[in-house]
Length: 375
Ligand SMILES: C[S@@+](CC[C@H](N)C(=O)[O-])C[C@H]1O[C@@H](n2cnc3c(N)ncnc32)[C@H](O)[C@@H]1O
Image (cartoon, rainbow, N blue to C red; front, side, top):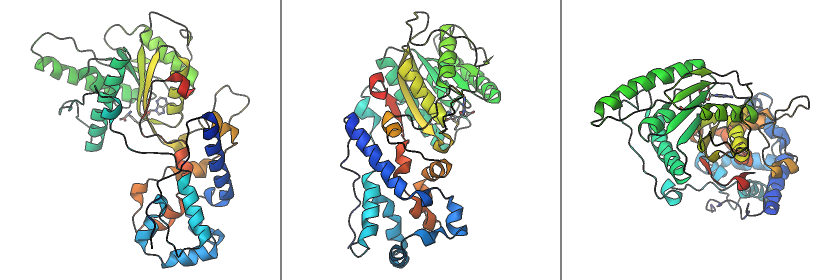
């Protein structure tokens, strides 16, 4: 008889001690299965890594229908499976961090989601349009609740989020991206959208386009310097700046009344970019809130070379640091496999690699307003 999906652990992050225990349990579990985790998926087949898997497990799983194999990541075990296999699956499941879906309305009761029209949505596919509608409403509600009128969109790409915030919500927006091509696409799009909004508007209303800054952000210090500098003189229409990312900047953490209160936002901010946003949120007095959808966790840096001042992207938490957890590239790659790809045609390796490692650094939408909780 099949058990129902295990609901995840009875573990908690309520206290630092509980968090540390959880991280240590994850580190110890991953440590026991290191050889499999460190192998690239292809090597599982090429180098016959399946021979490392317990022969009883292989024998039992070979006979199972694909449907029950697809339920493995949800912690569904069968009574007739070897007890060591059941224990492995249930332990993995118990270590998963909670990821219940929450409706934005439950924690942002005053948010409104503006449906974006065809001009603003030009170039977006339906997934992107949905993301921009939901996220811009959320960022606007958080900015209003924190008294911030400026939003910095980090890793802004072609400026979809930045433009929705500027035109639909009339926020002052700074769009930072490493690519100067993205800055010029953002500016061209913004001018076109501005004309459309101006023509639609009966009363004379001023629409501000986002200000674009080109900078390849490689550390939280750089990000803080660029954000504060751009906000300090963000008075007029946009200027595209190619920021050398090394300039001296207003002092982080110092009260500076010429710098407005601001919200940091990022949609699919890759690898270390999300981590650097978190660090800037914690260290900068002017940053009132952070709304981030992380992305490309495989690109997180991990090594800390003593000859540089840059901190690695992983681990970020003290609990993970104290558990001496090291991931490595293969684990990070495995952690980024999407469950949506688990189809019967692809099932063999998807199932075998599903480990709680993905939960170590994954957040879906991280909304943070409490700096001390993040620090
Ligand atoms: C996945 S795209 C997301 C773009 C946009 N936010 C969206 O959702 O449409 C990530 C963007 O971040 C930018 N990016 C990646 N790493 C960066 C870095 N270190 N500094 C600045 N921009 C970066 C890339 O150029 C790219 O435009």
